[in-house]
Length: 195
Image (cartoon, rainbow, N blue to C red):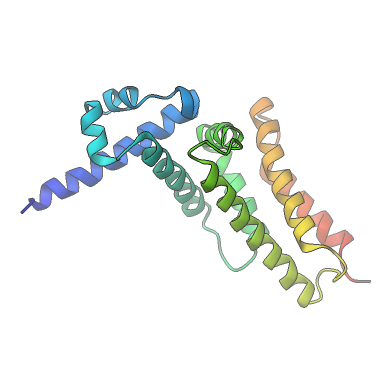
């Protein structure tokens, strides 16, 4: 029977591996990052690393989940305003440039069907799109937004603004991602307010 302390050490080592892998993937991209490099960075052999994660793909999937967990927990999304939650996440992302670079780099790489992150990003976009659409429909049902607006198109535009601002911010650190996304949503509310 494993000792209690060894279980806690295993969890701590797993978290250390995830944090290191996040950095390595952010700097090198999925294809150029190696398990050996990650393993050596945390004081393990490649076989030792594979004790915690079964493959590079498994490690990568966990890194992506961890990135979202860090983003959404730090942003403290509240209520049921999906746009406000997205703005909070984007605002938080400005404090962690490595995560923004990881997301932008890997989401572009994951456009290839054979990329191990492809299914993750497809599902992530579907989920965010659905949450934003539901929020827009709720705003329409309450009479705060014009019922003639297409919720899916507005949700897609919101995601496009968020993703596009990440690229602009990486090129120009003075670009305010959250303020721009918030401004976009205020325009939608103003232009889409019922007559």
